[in-house]
Figure 1 (cartoon, rainbow, N blue to C red):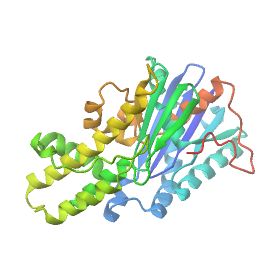
Figure 2: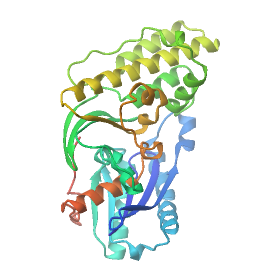
Figure 3: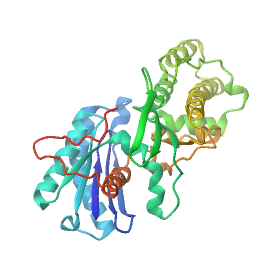
Figure 4: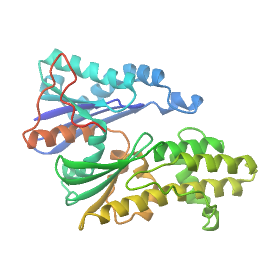
Length: 332
């Protein structure tokens, strides 16, 4: 079965096509809308929605061309319908509904976080072996920091998440405080990797000690803001030290919480997904974990197509009713 999937949960218009019979990715397309957001220092939902309106048809056309297929060749459509920017999600959902109506083919809606959760299995679409179950999974991005216990395909439990800010948001806010452009997270990673010394990482920013499997990063942002008020940001070494120490605090927190959760299930393999999983320091400090390829950590539609494929293979794929966006595959 050929599945065309769409993800417009934030500011990237993502399309992918997979063939579940051969279990292979036929094409992927991502149209990024980061550039229009830079002058605002962050994502503007209205602008993101308008960018999706322009880019999504092009992304679909590009994916079909890469795969050497037409819309009539598709057997099923898949789209994320939550969580995310409501306007952006509505663009993707409405477009996929229109595709399904025009072609007379079924469509289903899926949870964006569930897509990230099973993205470590995208490696199996490249004829490589995926990580063995059970997993303790950290889903960490600009909007989410969540822990799950995954016992098998589509068999998982939510363990906990952030009480306030996501780790990716904390990275971007720290960057903004020292004058870095949006998105600051990847830039912080590069600057610290290239310029920071071990001594630069030792500013004692707080590691929140919240209970259980919960996270909190709002206190860290406040601590960095107070440090910046007294700092000379014209001094590059002082700026790098703030960035390096803030990154150290975020990464330490993610590693500690994830390892503690994994220790509760003997033999559980740690997997890390989401945009922050691209961070090189997190990959170094949590080296025992499985990380998807960077292009499959950030928002993408291949993970949505994969999820639809997993639902098909387990006999759980059902079409969404035309009058509702029911058939939600998870509420987080």
